Length: 114
Length: 114
Image 1 (cartoon, helix red, strand yellow):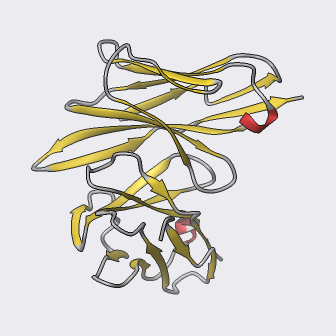
Image 2 (tube, rainbow over the protein chains, first blue to last red):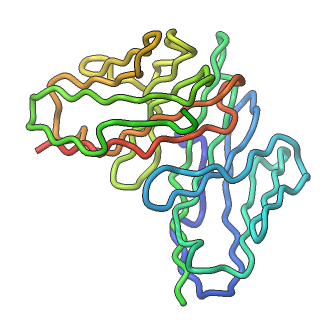
């Protein structure tokens, strides 16, 4: 069963549009949710969220977590072609016996066309 | 170093051959993770280490996969008797003190099994 579900799986928008990417999760002993951007190779870190309702912002990107409804959104305003990438959501949770796990969703492939 | 270094970048093996991948985590990072990504799909967790000790190996196909992180050496992931379905990009990531916080990823090793 998928613990981390991202939607949509792919999205095509025009430059200047605003997009919202979704990540829902179903884990017990949640610790944090992380967003990554993967362009050609290595994913690069965007945000880490641990508390509900506190928006994290970096330029045109922002993200928020809802721990009651078990989801997070990643917003990108005024999209540019350089935002084209796969956006990955990962959830860190305590899996018992002193062990933590970090599980990724399938990612959302965003394509921004000029 | 200040980045996770993975070698080689590309590796081609015939079915049944052995493949060995290397990862040097960022200096000072205690946790190392290996993930498998098939065709830009989801990241499949394989194994994590806390220093030289296996932290979580629940994702490892135990029959043919093994991994080590020895002192003063790069970490390694070895696949004995490779199969076609092992073709994937293998990512290594490291994090500092707290497990799973802000992973830094290497550029990956593209393994092609022919």
